[in-house]
Length: 309
Ligand code: MBD
Ligand code: FE
Image (cartoon, rainbow, N blue to C red):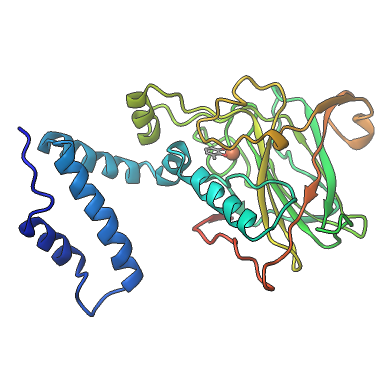
């Protein structure tokens, strides 16, 4: 069977009617976007001779995706969240905006509301026998290279099982375990005392992994640590670093890895004096360089539904 009906008046009229594209009511931007997406879907069904069985498989997949709460997990898995970064990077280049710590995707596992500490925060609340101590520290600087006082540095990462608090399928973690927030002082410095994370893997029975299986892809990320840096003066930075040496660094299912975001891990002693669980600990320096507002505002601030506790 290879019929082609996309260009037919009947099909085009249906597309217009379904999106009320010529009507006065509704949200014009929403109608513009939906008309385009629906049109592309109509065309794909026609071009690829998508069968009714294939179509309903897709519809039921969307139901499972929603039931599993994984739409914001599939988005990075399909490279869509990375595409938004690629576009923001291109916008910056077009505007002549250079420098600063590179952005990389937020991902779906941030939780707002971690208690804010001055300069230094302890992030590990729950014991995790399989994770060694880790200190993450650095300086927040502005476009002039000078330290930024009063910056809010938020940090979140997984435990030794690759699970995040609030989203832990085993229910094992306390609220805000491995989630920290510090306010920088005049020296612009921040420090997090925490435990070494392990890479995340998509829930094996979830909709995202189900789709990845059909593609012959894995759903794993290298070990990584997320950051938000928020100030009144500069653009908000959303970034992550990867733990150097993780075998998945260049095979991240969410495409967040960037050359500049793999800081060296060094071994130090003196952890006992810092209150860490062992005297020998891993140390990562990760400096955070911010970029200026554009015409007085943050032109790339992202609003999305986020968990809060
Ligand atoms: C993560 O921890 C993450 O950072 C992303 C982007 C997707 C899934 C899990
Ligand atoms: Fe993550």
